[in-house]
Amino acid sequence: GAGVSQSPSNKVTEKGKDVELRCDPISGHTALYWYRQSLGQGLEFLIYFQGNSAPDKSGLPSDRFSAERTGGSVSTLTIQRTQQEDSAVYLCASSLRWNSYEQYFGPGTRLTVT
Amino acid sequence: DQQVKQNSPSLSVQEGRISILNCDYTNSMFDYFLWYKKYPAEGPTFLISISSIKDKNEDGRFTVFLNKSAKHLSLHIVPSQPGDSAVYFCAASAEGQNFVFGPGTRLSVLP
Image 1 (cartoon, helix red, strand yellow):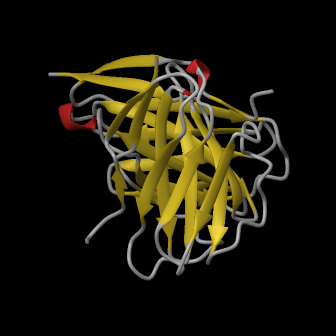
Image 2: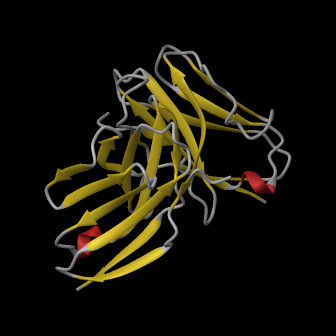
Image 3: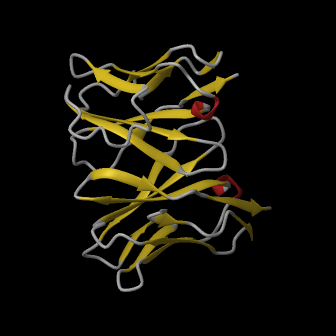
């Protein structure tokens, strides 16, 4: 594909359930980033991957959040035991290298926890 | 503790006039700054960037100015067009890691 894709585009889940968000980066991009945007807030950095490894996980809001990347491509962000404050748009971005400043964003997944 | 601030949540400008979007930061370790534009229901798209070794970068109608001593940068759009109406995010990075975004400024260009 030409750009970063994310699925699902919308997800409504009940409080306490687990959700899994998927990101397909641009082919050949070695770096992948997860952000979230809560209503009225700026973009909040969550985690980035260099290849399949995540050097810094300190941006994840709690231990209910985890992310993995396999094969240097697809990444999944998992939120366990979702809470209402997890409701946000989760954005994925990729870049050619980990220290490339230009990032290409996907359309996001809108998560609503009821 | 907001490291990147965009104090104007919204801005309205007449078509053809100059739009000036402002951004302030607190972390002196930031060495690269970017502006992203975001339309509703789309991800942000990269617009223009500037390294801390420069004070100005120009790309067509878009110019970014950096004042390191004031920890301030601004994005100028001249002339403004209705298609420029979007939310603009300022972002900063230290050594290409952990990008920090501001809350965004919604620009409305009025025809």
